[in-house]
Image (tube, rainbow, N blue to C red; front, side, top):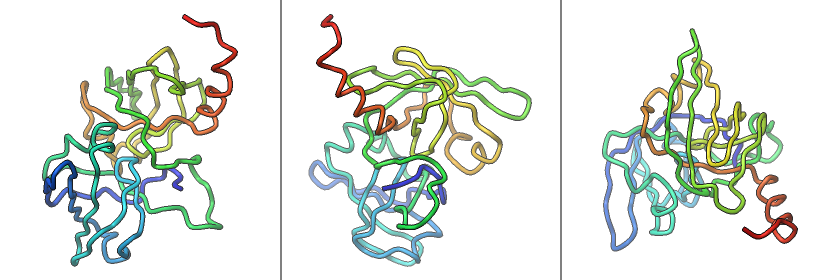
Length: 199
């Protein structure tokens, strides 16, 4: 379980294909605090540490993860948003994030607002993929509040700290991002499905 509050931006140090899996070696100041079998969110994707070496550690993404997220597009040198799992008893500063990415979205527009930014995203509005104004959304592991919400679109406002300390400073129009929709919203959508008119 995570909160969507990014602790560190790691750098991809190496990528190794192993059949349909991808071993991702990360360089991060968090590495020396980790242990094998520990879970970390990588751009919002929960992955397990399988090896440690100095200031690097390795995680493995399976085919299902690579198909549902942007991790299959990684290149050596890319920055990754990192968050360790929530410790029981800590404050929940963001919102409840599982680290189970629902799919990939695409940045469609970036508006600069004299010291802040509004990022616009589009996504496939499948079952359970809903946003509401002032609701929660996770973008590459970052817990955010939705500004505007439409069918298959939403926007979020970004303060300078988030822009500088997460991948938001790297985004351009067309950038692919991992999306995890609000857990409560997904359950409500599932419960309502039988009561909605069929298309």
